[in-house]
Amino acid sequence: MKQQIQFMEIDGGPRFYSLLGAIGLFVLAGLAAAFYMEHNGHYVTGMSNQIVWGTPHVFAVFLIVAASGALNVASISSVFGKTPYKPLARLSGLLAIALLVGGLAVLVLDLGRPDRLIVAMTKYNFKSIFAWNIFLYTGFMAVVGVYLWMMMERRMNRFTTVSGFFAFVWRLILTTGTGSIFGFLVARQAYDSALMAPMFVIMSFSFGLAIFILVLMAACKWSERPLGDAILFRLKNLLGVFIASVLYFVMVYHLTNLYITENHGVERFILLDGGIYTQLFWIVQVLIGSLLPIILLYLPFTGKSRGWIGIACALAILGGLAQMYIIIIGGQAYPLEMFPGKEVISSFFDGGINSYTPSLPEVVLGIGGVAIALAAVFVGIRVLRFLPTSLADELVDPHYSTDKAAA
Image 1 (cartoon, one colour):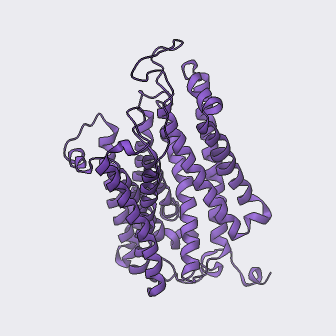
Image 2 (tube, rainbow, N blue to C red):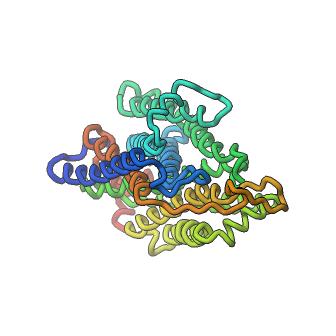
């Protein structure tokens, strides 16, 4: 770097509190939706005895997975020694914690009985992946908190690499644990695959980086701080690689299931005959959420436009939500093949496709979790020095020269 990077809080004032108030309205709406569902019972939602994880779980798992990926920028700088990413490490850590808090808030408020969380925190069944995740999620916040301390306290900077490596390993384990919730669940035909864990890891890279780029662009524009092309184009190129990697893992996952005869039914359901799930897969996840962002990020014209880069990030996030919806809800909609090759019918809905329609309170609760994460980031960059005062090319681009700038 040519000069020392400076960090500073963003300014307050009426504009800050107006935006924070607008975000707060979505948080309040989410809390009101949670109260409505808890007070009236989950029958007011689209969930049932067959589909017990609904739209709030789609948002919650998406945010939790994205939290791990948001820390990837900090890991690139601390663990892999890529200097241009170092000024972004603080914001990366803050966003990771904020996304995890938002996701866990949705999970807790969707329990129906939030007080039962005390049981989950005091009684552990270590044969259950859910028990492991209690430690992984809370530990992640503690580890990233220490990592941020090492970065922000000058006399502790010498421990940044060690703490960054520890945070890197922890977040890989965390995402593996989240993916294993589905990979270890043999009671659903669409789950029960060892590929779930690595697929969730690469999904976290894509979702987290897409959110990070949008937050970075919005924060710099809102606070009128320079954001050079060098670092932005590095991030968008990396995002394109991650989106393509997710698409590759999705292809391998479905090809693997198609090779196994007992999974032909669920694959036909998702890929051909699943109605809304098939449409979400091909149109939203594959076309709009994967192929289109890759094209936008790498075409010479759109790839150099900040507006199109932002649209590509938003589309990647939309595709990620669709992918989570297909995995979580589509996986529950298809019945378990208890007797392969035989038709099973009973009064308990065995053998039938389970129906589900998201209700407004569920959607509002999920959006409330996103608002909680955004509020945490916004307050964080206001009260502490997470955001650089400038990310201009002359500060972060190691290959910058005055001749290059003139050209």
